[in-house]
Image (cartoon, rainbow, N blue to C red; front, side, top):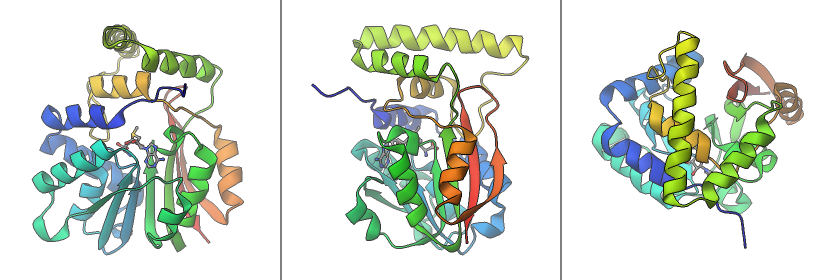
Length: 258
Ligand SMILES: C[S@@+](CC[C@H](N)C(=O)[O-])C[C@H]1O[C@@H](n2cnc3c(N)ncnc32)[C@H](O)[C@@H]1O
C-alpha cells in the first residue's frame, strides 16, 4: 500500500471559505513586491508552480503581469483558485489555472517559458524535489527569474518527516489532536520569543499554517548550499537569498537565468 499524502486542496478550500480576506490578499501582494519589486511583475509572464489557493497568481495579475498561469497537481486547489480569482481578480486580467504536475515533463514542455517562475513552498511537497526544481528552472526564459522557497535541512527534519507521515495515517480525531497539540506549542514558542503568532505574513493564517506544516507530506528539505550549487549548475546566478527565521522553515532563493 502506498504512503498516504496530505490533501493541500482541502486545507486551501477551508482557508478560502472564511479566512481569505482583502487584507490577506494585500499581505500576499506586498510579499511579492518586497522581494521582486513591481517592475519585475508588471507586463511580465508569471507562472505560479503549486499555486494552492491561487492567491499569488491573483496578486501577480493585479500587479499588472501580462500573462499569469497557476498550476497545481491537486484538482481541489484548481477549483478553489478559480473561485478565488472570480472573487478577487479584475475581469480582464484573470489568471489561468491548470491541473498540471511540475513532475510531468510533457505537460511542462507545452507551457512555454516565463519571465518569472514562482515556486513558493511547493517543490518540497512533490515527492521528487530535485526533479521539480529542474523542471521549474526549465520554465524560465533567459534573463528571467526563478523564485524558490525550500524547507531548510536541520537535524530535526527527519523527526518532522515522521510526524507528518503519522499525521496522514491518523484518523480525523488523531489529526485534530496533533494539530492542536502543535498549535499550542507554536503559540507558546511565539509568546516566549515576543512574536505575535497571528501576525502571519504572505496572506496565510495561524491555524491553516499549522495544519499545512504538521500534515504537509510528501516532505523533503535541503541546505541552502545544496540548493544553490544545484541551481547554479543549471545556469543561474543567485540574486538574493533569504534564510529561514526558524530552523526547519523555508529558505528563499531568487535566481536569475543567465
Ligand atoms: C504548501 S502549498 C504552497 C501553495 C502556494 N505556493 C503558497 O505559497 O501559498 C504546496 C502546494 O504544492 C502543490 N503540489 C504538490 N505537488 C505538486 C506537483 N507535483 N505539481 C504541482 N503542484 C504540486 C500542492 O498541491 C500545494 O497546493
